[in-house]
Length: 169
Image 1: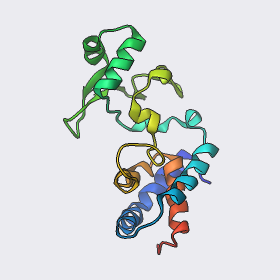
Image 2: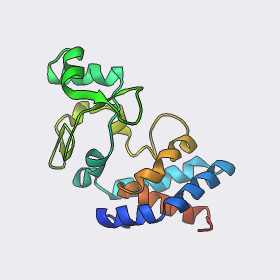
Image 3: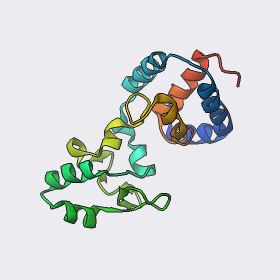
Image 4: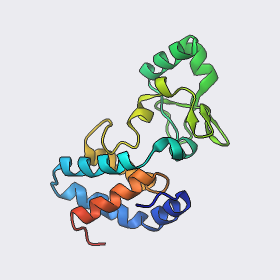
């Protein structure tokens, strides 16, 4: 299992075309999702996300109305105050607000710790979205090619998935 973030970034980028091909392969075949879930659960339990926190440094965090309500309550702010102080709009999409970022990552990241961990947004709770998340497993796979460049769980899971289905690399 590879956990070195420099190696994950290099290998993830090197394998982007292969991972895109694998994603298309999954869409064309009917594999039982339960097998993928078991592999992802095993890898997820072997890696402590809180020692890595790379997702908090790299990825944008969408916040829903429900997240805003929970986070504003947690911080003792009105929802409007929370949105004004802690969110912005994404450079990529204009649908949901995202948490503000500093140069080091998410505004709520201190070292490798999330200062709002108990009230964190749903997307953070479900990350890396291999086991949990909105939509089907196949639909969530669209984001995994990018995530394999910064998340050890995603990178290692994709490699195991490929072996499991005997994917031609």
